[in-house]
Image (tube, rainbow, N blue to C red; front, side):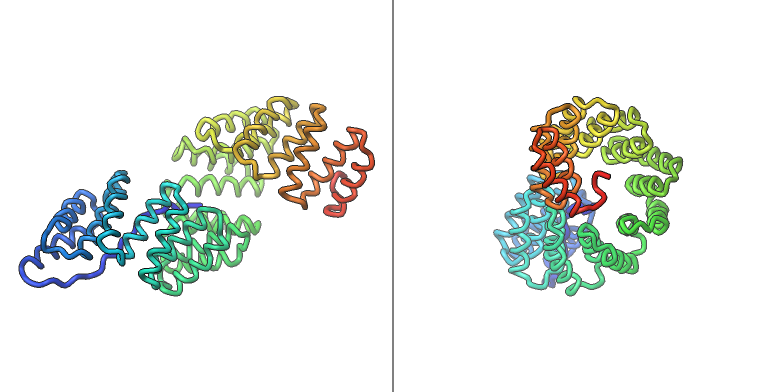
Length: 399
């Protein structure tokens, strides 16, 4: 998902009197700009002027914070936002902006508190609802994000970002039809937003409508030829259609744009693995791990490639790392369990299958494989129970 938090400021119009007012208005106009080189001195002039009211200073501090954030000077930005709120606790922009900065730093709870503060002082602040929704979505809570996007859209129905991001929340939940409807509305409001075409393409791909998906990735590439994810997702879609030469060409193009993308290397590695080219797959997973040593998926998939080559010790080492990085994913435990079976470590296999089932009780394969492992341990009664339960979940498992 592509939802990088950004700082957004909407400064209200201010009417002042006299020549000092004219000068202040001129500086404030520059303070509301987008170029940090102009914004920072203009806002500073407003902040230090004895003619500026507390609420005007608060707004100028909010805007200067945005400029500092653009320059990567987050400490200065945070100081300004703290000061803005102290000077005018009813400044909703400062609350939202500080929440965005906290979110960008991974401080979800503090971000949420600030979005709540913005809504408390301005109940119709669409941006506060929208950014709080973004925070929920980034935090993996799409169900909580959607009502906030609903409210943001009710207040500001012409903001294409709200529709685009709500569409992504629906897509993450697996509701692809609602997602596509929202992406359509976002595109109707802004047809030049490449990321929405990428997201809609993913929703179509989830529905196995690969032709529409590819058409959307094409559109995204036409709008912005430097969007590497459009090439990589189009590559994955071509692979699903069995058009491997075009898939490999797209992966190569994506890596030209973003040569340090772990996700792209994983995607191409998966393609090679699916074709039985395990050494090439392992080489790509190696690159992915070098680019992002904390990517559990790369270790898991490299482990599977090693297992396919019969190198179960290396497979187990990779599965160990994957489970350490992300112990919540049952498939990682199930894969390690299979490798333990292959190496005769049946008790460890049973423990992994049991842990996987604890996280997903409807995993017929883990249930069946635990039964097979129990049989190898001499527990025929336990094996019969597990295999029968697995076939209730999936009559074809193990056949």
